[in-house]
Image (tube, rainbow, N blue to C red; front, side):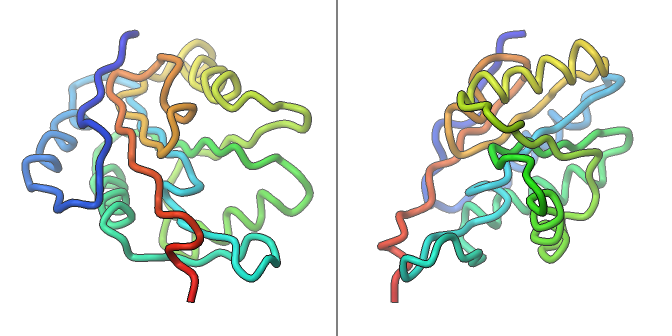
Length: 176
């Protein structure tokens, strides 16, 4: 399936109502087994390293974060739409629980599943493409929209439409 980028890379600009109307139309296409995919890090959850102590989750109400949240809010209201999260986080002891806690704390509670990388998987593009292939071929789902901040989140096909978000500013932008 060839994909269409609904928008060029979104910058930190005001999102127009027409944008959401277009997304609503896409998600409400009369298709069985339709699906939307969200990346997690820097898409649903924004975070940065702080004080050299590793990754401390910090949530920022940026325009991009608000935009993604609004797409999620539209998605959960669409009848018969499956919602999946695909993350490059490794499926290690505790990672799944921490991720679900973070998502739940922000209200991302309605979804059909989360896919984590297996230990040893290094190529994010291949991994995420393989998951989308599995959703289509093994689960008979049609991916209408795929949203992520990196090209490896959305390239590789298997999505009717994609949204490539701009990267969030670097950790230096957020430092005190």
